[in-house]
Each structure stands twice: as structure tokens, then as C-alpha cells.
Image 1 (spheres, rainbow, N blue to C red):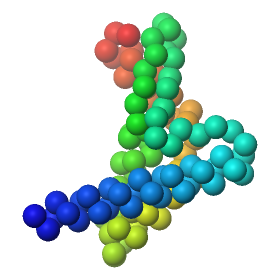
Image 2 (cartoon, rainbow, N blue to C red):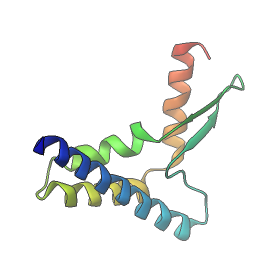
Image 3 (cartoon, rainbow, N blue to C red):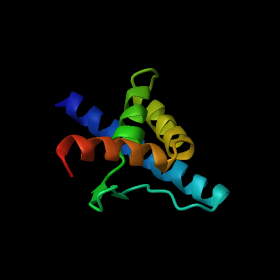
Length: 103
């Protein structure tokens, strides 16, 4: 039970870090950044909506495994991912997924 609570704590710290980093990126660049929901229109016109898991959440979550306390490493990883990773990477990943699924 404790392990599950620790995972939730780390995930919440990553979400908070993504929000902080994404908000900072928006303020510094003036470009809209997807923090909670990313919408992509494929080359064929299909709209795909997701939470930016592949390019932002998982890298930040994996960074939490490198430091102690893990929630703090997750928070810092979320801030870095939210501030440094552009939405074009998520677009590229979604385009690859859409092609493989035939959308």
C-alpha cells in the first residue's frame, strides 16, 4: 500500500512540475503550450487529443527515479520537461501513431 501511495505522490509532483514549467514557458515565449491536453490534426484531417504523456510525463517520471526524495526529483523533472519540451515533439509522435493505426 505504501508503494502505491509513493507512486501517486510522485505522479502528483510531476503534474505540478509540468504545470509550473509549462506556465513559465508560456510567459517567457508567449506561445501557447499544452499542459493538460494536447490537440493534433493529422495530415489526413483526423483530430487526436491526448495528455502529453510520451514527451513530457514519462521523461519527468523517469527522472524521479534518479534522485531522493523521489517526489522532489519528479517535481524538478516536471518543471524541466514542461519548460524545455516543445509541443512539436508530441505532434511528431502522434503523427507516427496515427500512421500506424491508419488514421
